[in-house]
Amino acid sequence: MLSARFFLFLQGPHGPFFSDLALRLREAGATVHRIGFNAGDEKSWAHRDAYTAFRQDKSEWEGFIYAFLAANPVTDLVLYADTRDIHAVARRLARERGIAIHCFEEGYLRPYWITYERDGVNGNSPLMHMSVQEMRDRLGGVTRDVPEAPAQWGALWHHIFNGARYHANMLIGSRRYRRFRPHRTIPVRRELMLYLRRLALFPFHVRERKRETRKLQESGANYHLVLLQLAHDASFRDHSDFKSIGEFIDLCIEGFATGAPRHHRLVFKTHPLEDGREPIPQLIRAAARRHGIPDRVQMIRGGRLGEMLDHATSAVTVNSTAGQQVLWRGLPLKAFGRSVYSKPEFVSQQPIAEFFADPQRPDRDAYMVYRQFLLETSQFPGGFYTAEGRAEALRQIVDVLLQNRDPYAEVGRPAAAPKPQLTAKIG
Image (cartoon, rainbow, N blue to C red; front, side, top):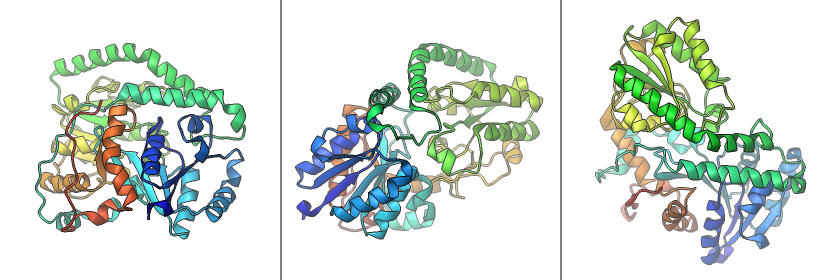
């Protein structure tokens, strides 16, 4: 009975996605509520009668959420990015009370999908414990066409704008949440300034990217791509053993200098949302000089990954979702972190120097099984940051939450209808 369902929302993606989702659930007869931790959370939530502000010190959060769950008939917990301190505590207490945990994340097959899983995502995903053979068995011969991996990262401007607006609201309303401390390691004011700086420098970075891309294309050189991630992102921070992005950069350059043919180049592609909080260009130049190959190493800011992969020899990453596009194209991939796609069938097990010397290609048939399994289960067409993207996602995800379906438990059941896939690009 829907009137007995009580959905508690914690922090979500920047923008109104959680608020829109709550509206659909409320229209269906469920109860919705949100606990907000700053003015950014408050401003992005339209349901003022269903909002509780947490204004205490983070050390008091466990007692606060324990008391809230004891006082309210919460049946479902909804959150985004499961490793934040507040979310990790809430997940643990929810499991103890038998509360369903709905986790959202950026799409594993981004940009035109979002991820929905139960209990955890990324390194905490149920996918971490599934073999490719198990996925093949559970698909039971499903052979529908697999959508092509898009060449672009997605709604970058919308993502940056929503992030800037969220942090601006946090700053403006900071007096109401004086004891709030963000999960990032830098102050809110600094975070906002980085977003604004990123917006201001965007045209200059586009010109630089075009210049560096043209230089690479005209060189005619064989090149290996290093797909950098945001050093403060949960996937890098919580699901890898690197202490810093500089450590990863140095490892890649050392391995390349040792193993790669002398006529090959190493190209670092920065994350599309890289905002300058890490001195990436300086770290790359210093490591290249230290290992004696400054003329063989290049950096390109963002850009269309698909176009760069078209002529690449191989790719290296920690655990970026961009690795999915590498595997889609059948290119050799070396991944150092824990990720949902780190399966031995398609991610290289070679030492890094050996990988650069002779990169082994993935078992593409195995990867296609894996990709099909994701599209049949946890990947939903749409996006968090545009109205069109949110509408596309909500059309499918609302019923999944209301019916309390675990996407991985559904696949393979005879009565399960095929999950619709993307029919139009989400800007």
